[in-house]
Amino acid sequence: MKKERVKQEYEKITSVLQNNGSGLLTGINRISAGKMALCAGVLFLLSVAPLLWLGRYNVMCIDDYDYGRQIHDTWMATGSLWQSILTALEQTGDFFMEWQGTYASCFLMAVCPMNFRYETAFAVPIIMIGMFSVSSFFFGRQILTRWLGGDRQRAAFIMFLLLFMFYQVMEAPFEGIYWYNGSTHYILMEALLFFLLTFVSENIWSEKKGMAVCRCVSATVIALIVGGGNLVTGLQAEILLFFLLVYALFMKRKKTVYVLLPFLAFTAGFLCNILAPGNTMRAGLDTDVGYSALTSVLLSFYYAAVFMIGWTNSFVILAWMAALPVLWQIGKRSEKGFRHPVWVTIGAFCVLSAMFTPTLYAVGMVGLSRVDNIIQMVFYLSLFFVTTYWMGWISHQGKTGKEAGQRFGAFLESTGNVMTAVCLLLVLLVWTLTADKNTYTGISALRSLGNGDAAVYYEEAQERHALYVDETIADVIVEPFSRKPALFAFEDLSTEEDNWLNLSVAAYYHKDSVRRKD
Image (cartoon, rainbow, N blue to C red; front, side, top):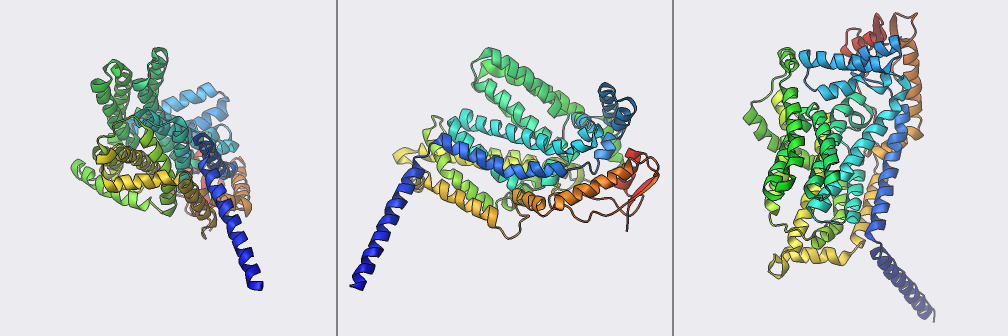
């Protein structure tokens, strides 16, 4: 009798679980693409909220002092924003003739917000995350919808998921989020390039002439700015704009002028950048020796493969798997041809590889963290775009297509939203339960906020600043930081007065010397 009762209870529990499980799966599969995009957007915002909150404790650092000294002096002497801007322009001209040709970056680095008010460093992560995430989102959605034929809701889901993934595994978060000069020179310039490509691409596809003219003017202005930025973004821009121009010439001839004007503006700016007299003078002082042009190009392919492997960790793989069913739906529903998946893959790899070439040619090395941030993002974008293209190619093969590909497509089709939900759950588990809480940026930022590292660091930074602005002190000796957020990985002052950073801080605040206590 007891055995019968146990058996009945077991069958009842099993039945309840089966019914509830079936209902749960049905509910997951009924979630619309729009709601999925909304959930992914909320996840992304929640994941970067700690990074923005940590920005509350950000301060001026490294060569922000070198580029901002003259502008800070002008502001302190006159209180005039216009006079400060004129000083920034004059300094940019001097740099162009004597140090480096990146005129747009030099100007933007000169007008660092902290030159006008020291406490405004909190704005740096807001600007950098805001510009880069918004530009990446619209650029990626443009590719997924206009070029690959997807719908806006699924494209939005993919881009929010990609942005969430990127910001959690970002190669150098301090240099791409909190350090003004480093993030301005690379992250901000790459963001402007994404806006530029979005405008040019939209003009190729759009039929609204009035808006096309506005986008063309905007793209031309942005092109001049990007042309005066870093050479990694510059080379990438030259390649992509050239291919867009060729595509317009052969496929959208009436739209050629909308691509030609930004292309010419960028090329003119880029030539001014690389041919600047300051580059020659700086090369004469630089002891680093780069590779030849051919060797740099060949090594670029090797390093691209090496870094791609390094950037493809378990977190990225799970996020990519979560996107696969959605990418399959985009490809399957698209009316595009998807006839050249191999060539598209090779092209994406070549563009990515080209981003390693400038540093190999100039200084004979790769792995500069602030450069790697933008290459990493281009890799993730390429990964998702190329995967979408292959999904489209597989889904358009029909009965004569490759059997293995069709079976894979059928599997993705059968999973509905369940595979996406399961993989996202695993992503969240890896994200939150990883033993080293500094592995992922959002969790690391929360940890630094919760344990007081950020607050203590900021208080000690303010104490240093009080010494810097004290006119009665000529030789400043500061205490070492006792605590610091893990994400704030930057070079601190040295115990030696003649260290370059010590000299920069001393010049900025007009001190005889600045050093850190032993």
